[in-house]
Image (cartoon, rainbow, N blue to C red):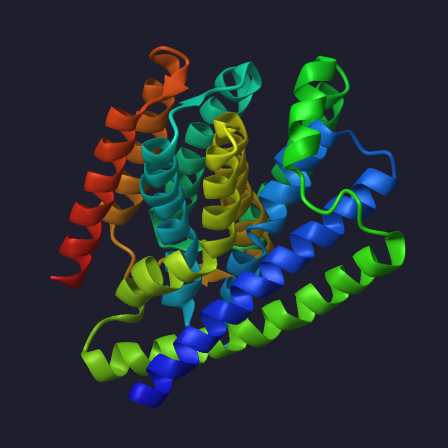
Length: 313
């Protein structure tokens, strides 16, 4: 068992490093291609920090650990809002960008409800996965289109938050390739150790996926959001989490279901309800005063502690 604990710890480190290198390299390449810094912040950075979830979910599905595959996405979306934004808001209250209120937050709620509808029959088919991926392409296209209309001040703010802008093209390409390789290695080790630990502790794969695996694969979002909050760029932290949650469902569930149809497994309707409820609660918090304050952050963290305690109990 202790070998599996050590393996899990090593895999989390690999996922963090791989995600960091991938985001830095991809951001630098996007900037050199002339892509708007706002679009980089809301797509490349947000989606890049979700790369660990994608790798882990794909490997879990292909390895027959379906519960981990679905639980990883649901648990990550819960952790992104309740744990990561809760902690970020406690560190530094954040104002919210108008686009997130107009488009992204309501879209996050709609997509979360769509996932509940897809899993109503207990499975996510290849057709449903294809539709989710089409939705992702539409979302990215609209985000890039909107980014071109933003003010120069907004673009400069996102530019300063996007990592790797001074990295050369050669180094950026190397970071992307190495980051992907490290992510694959970390994802394989994490899935293997998670299955072993679940068996040893008498817990279901779903519980391990909703807690340990979900938090582990959310480490890049945690690092990005906390760093942005400490810089006083709270709207970047919120945008990163909202964009990641959208990508987790459209890209990860969609891409994984396209490769290997997914079963809901041991994921309960309570887990899905918590995911949707947190998306709605975050949107209400953001509309109240156009900010996410320390009180709201404390509430989100308390909800996460209660949820994890219930899972482990």
